[in-house]
Length: 243
Ligand code: PXP
Image 1 (cartoon, rainbow, N blue to C red):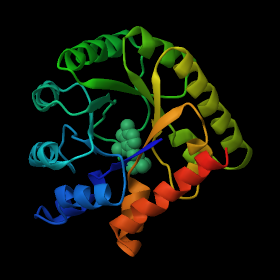
Image 2: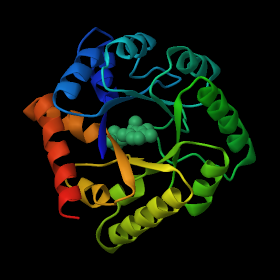
Image 3: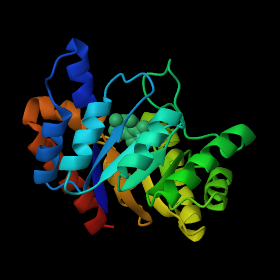
Image 4: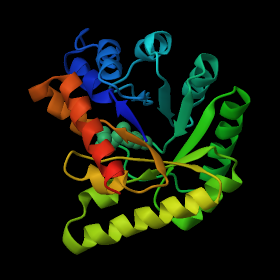
C-alpha cells in the first residue's frame, strides 16, 4: 500500500496571499522524509493552488514519484507529456467546484472520447495512467476498455456518509475494488479520507495506493507535516496488518 500525499492545500495557503510561502516544494521534501511513497498535485485550469512553477520544480526535486492530476486542458496535457511524471491521473474539473466533486462520467461519449485521447497521449509519452472514477462497475469496465493502467476510486460518498449509509458506501468501494482488479486494473482510492475514516478503506486488499490531502495538511497545522504524514501512514499500516 502506497500513501501519496496531495500537497495542493499547501499551495492554497500560499495563494491566499499570492506570496512565496508556504512553498509546496519544501512541503514535498518533508512529506518524503516522513515516509510517504509519493506526492500528488493537481494543476487546475484556474491555477487556484498549484502553479506551473511548482510542477516544474517538483518534477526536479521529488525523489519518490509525482502523481500529476489533470483534466484534459491542452496546455496542461502538453506539460504532462513534456515533464513525464511517474503517473498521471485524469480527473473531471469544473471551475465553480470547491474540490473535485465526482469521478469522470465515462458513460458520456464526449467525455470518454476526450479522456481516451488524453490517456493515449500520456501512455505514448511513457506515463503510467489512472482514471478517477466513482465506484461504479460500468465506469470501471469503461476504464479498462480505454486501456488505463489504474483507476482511482472516488471515496467521497463514503467519507460524507454516516451510519448505515456509510456501511453501504464501504460495500460499494469493496465491490468496485474487486471489479477493477478482475478487469486487470491497478486500484487506487482517494478523496475525503481522514484519520477517522481511512482504516476501513485501507483494509480493502485490492487497493494499492491512497491519495490523501486535506486531512493531512489540516492536521499538519497542529502537529507539523512530518508527524501528520507519519500518523496517517501508521493507521494505514495498522489497517493492513489487522486485515
Ligand atoms: N484524489 C483526487 C483525484 C483528488 O482530486 C483529490 C483532491 O484534490 C484527492 C484525491 C485528495 O482529496 P482530499 O484532499 O479530500 O484528501
